[in-house]
Each structure stands twice: as structure tokens, then as C-alpha cells.
Amino acid sequence: MSDGRNQELSNFFVYNFVCRFGDAAVLADLAEEIVLPAFMDSTLRRGYDQTEYFLNGVSLEVVGDYHCVYGRFIKKTVLVSTQIYDEEKGLVESNVEMPTARSSIFVLVLDNHQLLLAPETPEAPMDVSFRSTIQKFLIIKYFEYIRFVAEQNRRTKVSLRRELPRPILRISPIANRDGIIDYISRFEKITEVQMLVNDTNNTTHHDDFYEKLYEKKKRTGSSIALAQYVNPDGLKKDEMIKEIELVTEDANTDILFKGTNFNGESVFGRNNDIRARLAANIPDTNLADASSSLVDAWKQAQVDKVIAPAENEGNRDALEKFKRIFRN
Image (cartoon, rainbow, N blue to C red; front, side, top):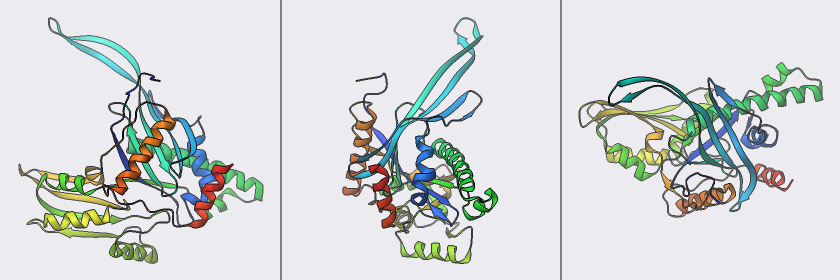
């Protein structure tokens, strides 16, 4: 049954959802205590001025054999008009306010920490605002957890925060070959590509070189590890496409492009410019059906090799933990 939104969602995007508590814990370790409560608490809001971001209709369900949390991500705001243009009078003062809401549907697949985001409306809130919102909710639940543990164990909150640093959330888009080729073709010349290796939950980097670079980063205590390719006369596009495709399969690497377009203008790009755009046939706006359609389309995209196969959570205990949570 329609509630006034689009009857069909066509595009959606896939992201790697990495939540770490320093080197002390990852998403699965504190899923029940912090991560899932950040999604399930319907009272949480992130706002400024007349704008609020929040989650709605959130559910924990097994969808297509995957443990998922899904719902709507909503941006509630007020559009303000101070003037209009009249064909006879020109610009005319017109102070009008109109409440509005824009939304996306999200599905977080816990088994391999991939996030599916599908815009429901024009200018729907997407990955950047989703990350900022969930980051705030995680911090709120983190401090609630610290207070609870301190009271239960007669520990100081300061000592607990030393042992368990506050969560940091990173959401990185999954790219694919079509997106990479399309974006690279807009450059006349690529002069520099930087690849910054990020921390993961429990998965590994798909390429041995970047996995070894990541291990060296951890071993040395470095805050940054990157590979940099530079040629003022222009890098080889075909070879860079292969390299970029390899390192973006798992979305654990941040990429910066520099170069010039065919007008000779400087161009800078990042991961979002090469993200995979997938399609899902969603017949209505029922959240359960919508999430099922998104998961089915996401699975099929992996089968069809449109995107790389998602790597399951590397910790068997973590998968058993998800199963227990969903049974309760």
C-alpha cells in the first residue's frame, strides 16, 4: 500500500561499514552493547538549526540468510523562502516556511559489515550524513555503556575509557569497474593517485601488497600508510584502472585522484566518484519487502561480478554472536 513515496526504488549504493574502538575492539565485539542500541533507540536525534536526522522503523531480521538491521534514514528540515520572482514586479519579498522530509532506506548486513543505501526522494540523505548521524549515536551509547560498566564493577570511567577508546566509524563506498572506467575517462591526464590504507573490522585487504602495507602500519604504530603514484606527464590509465579496481574491491582504501580534464582544468576525485551504482526492483515502500529486494539485488550483483564478493566476518565467534542476538 502506497504512503505517497516513490513506488519503485531504482538505484542504490553499497558501502563498507567499519566501526572500531581503537585497537581494543571492532563492530562485532560490542554489537549487542553499543552498535545495535545506536540503531534501535528511536529517541536519538542529530540536529542543527531547523534540521534533524534520525532513524525510523528500524528492525533486526534475518534477510536472505544474512543478519541485518534495516530501516529508514530521515532528514527532517524546513525550507525557507525569502523572495520570489514575479514576471511583472520582478523580485518580491515572500517569507514562507515549509516543513519537509527526505529519506533513504538502509540495510546493514552484519555478517560482512556492508551497508546498502537507497534514496527514496530527490536530495535524500546519504552516506556522509548517515555516517555523521550514526557516529553521534555510537558515542552516546558508548558513554552509556562506560557508565554502566563503571557502576557494575566499581571502576572509574577514566580507566575504562583508556581500555576501550570511543568508537570511530568509517563508511567507504564499494566501487566497480564500470564506475572506475567512467570516471577515469573524464581525465585527459591523471598526474597523481594516492591510496590510503584503512583499518578494517576483522576482514583483510584483497591484495597482498596492501595487506602487507596494512600489517606494517599496525606493527609500526603509524597513523597513516599509503601508496602514491605520481607522474606529471600522466600515469598510464589502463594500468591505473587495474590497480584501482584491485584495491577498491573491499572498500578498505581511500583514494585521491589528481589530474586535468579535456579543457585543461584541474580535477580532483575521491572514492565516491567511482562508487558502484546498482539497481533494485522494489515494488512498494514496505520496509521488510524493500530490504529483501535490496539484499537480493546486492547478492545478484556479486554473482554477476558487478561488485566483488563480500567477505564474511572473519571471526567465527562473531557470527555465532549475531545468531544468538537474533534468536533472542
